[in-house]
Length: 128
Image 1 (cartoon, rainbow, N blue to C red):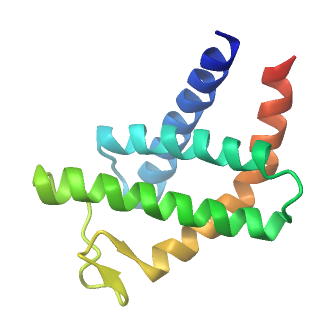
Image 2 (tube, rainbow, N blue to C red):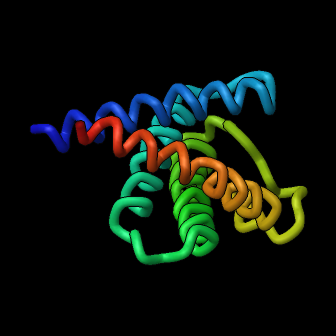
């Protein structure tokens, strides 16, 4: 049960944090992005915990790949299947179906790099 509570706490922090980041970046967000943010921080927490011997930069690239994957899945669901038009990268270079692109994948790597120390502190605090 403690693992569930920990993951729920990390998920909630990720949801709120990503929602705030998106509002600051774009001026608005969609509720689906809160869920994506929650899954993203849980995933970054997993990477930080399970890949302890992996270097910091490699963890950031793993995190960036994970966040890009989450964005792609959410894009397929909310933008293509449900037609909610949450975002559209079709005008960006090196995009895939307008759902992910190289530029934002690089942003996810940078965000993962910045988030790893926060995730490490969060994991230590929640294990007490």
